[in-house]
Image (tube, rainbow, N blue to C red; front, side, top):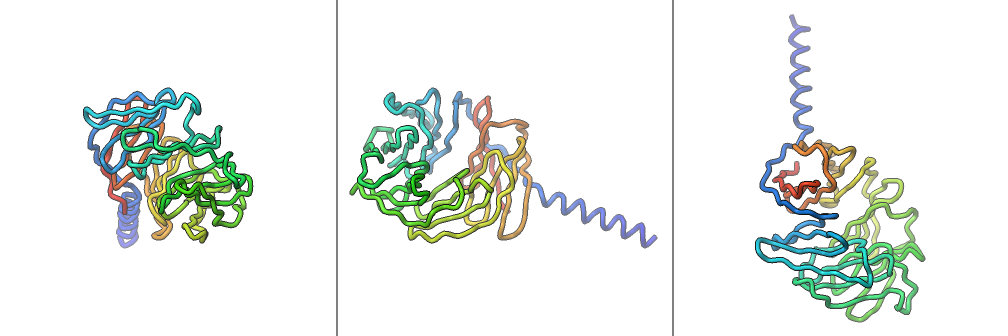
Length: 263
């Protein structure tokens, strides 16, 4: 009888533990958007996406678009500051800055700089600067777009960048071996840990990240040493985007927004 009681106790604990490893989300709304790539949502609730190399921005009955026939395909877009949107054109070693109505403010051609720069990663940083990873010396630098000045701030990266993400004060990257690092504006590099194999990934903060693998979505916390599977109704999706506990799933049908509470 005691053995039977112990068996059911362990079974119950196992069930509870299994439940704790899942995160259930609440669907908020959906948008019917035909896009090649979904970029995310800014703090003013505008959505951004790319279709046929054209950047679109919309909310309710407001919409804007930007197209650059000279540079063509956009490599990456940074929408952290909606008043200064950063478009990176890696094939042309150039960046274009846009205002909140997608009007062009400034074009930056790194090939024309007095320093030898071949950019393979960019993003907006603090104090009128851009993060720029220079693949010529494999070092990270800061480019002041008002003064047209560039300074190297880091030592050389040991491996190539597989994925990167920036905020105003930190440059995050994952290398070819799935090692996760961060670098602040003073050039201080920290090793965060090793990321599981992924199809796509998004860094939430210094110790949490969301990643997808084989159309399954997971949230992992290095600090708490926890891993959770995020339960979605969509069985296939192209991309996901996370911001302020809103998880957006991009599929062939459009964008589905979910409320998610991170552990």
